[in-house]
Image (cartoon, rainbow, N blue to C red; front, side, top):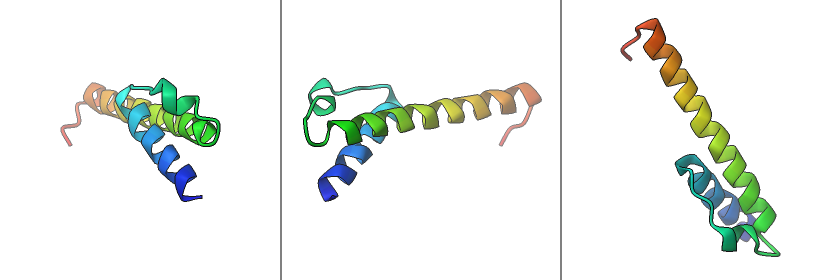
Length: 62
């Protein structure tokens, strides 16, 4: 279980920075956890960018 959580966390970090590690993604045991983390991290990064852009358009400074 700890390996799956570690793989997901690594994927989340990679996804949030726009990186993908092919060897981790293709690992037979933890690859699915890593790939889900990449997707979740990518979505989180997109949401943060979207919120920042909406705030910018609305003229908010914080």
